[in-house]
Length: 364
Image (cartoon, rainbow, N blue to C red; front, side):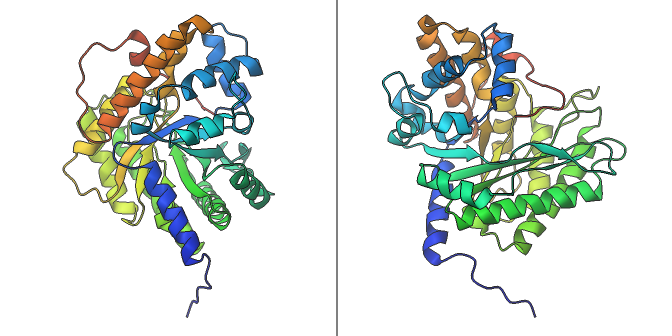
């Protein structure tokens, strides 16, 4: 008979559970501001701004110094290593500014993909070596949760059994290490939207991936009440000719989750996967209105879908600070409402909010 040696103390479990619950308190979600230097450079290039550390710092300062009322919509912010140690123009650490607003600070922990030999260009994720030491240091430096993104793709051969099992086990090992060091792990198995598959195929694959992930989390004795899930919504591939309503996306998504994700998980924070800001909000709202059982908080962990309008409003100019913060606050409030199923589309969204943010083979 299997015997489980204690993995966490009751005090550790209590802290992890409280952190997770704080992040997804009613209407709150996550701002994913953990773009790597290269990814942030691609965003800045679109608005014709040079990719320097100072320009990256200036944009994030504008976001993080927004009015304190942002904490009603944003429960957590994921930072990149560089950003965790950056300061505002007054010399205050970004992480301290966020914490003062009551926002939980998180950190990106994976170190990108590595090829899985013998597969159709599938990948596993690097970063387990030295992870415990990094988690301990990040916890000491003010982080309370981590993020690890695994990528799975859909085509005629993918995802393979090997890719699903390898990424599920890596996510579980990461989650266990996080919890041992006092960090709530965000588990992100993303089935990317590249391809021309229909929504039904995406649902099938998403269910297979999530089932494998939660089997692995159980095998690794991960305390589910001290975790959060960051999955893709169930949608058609970006190149598909079939179009689906937010209600159809919601039904397929909640069905997949209800079949695979234990009720012990406190919150599910969806990634936007290259949807436009407005589509990401409408789909989240429909998910929260879906008539199926929903034992978890259903919220957001958006990067592009929270920042696109703000980035366009900023344009690299300090004089645009107010307009940038207003654009950010507007999207944060819209998603807060959607996380409660209370968002009403007014049709007055700006051009940036309706543009597709999809990038093929997207990496952070």
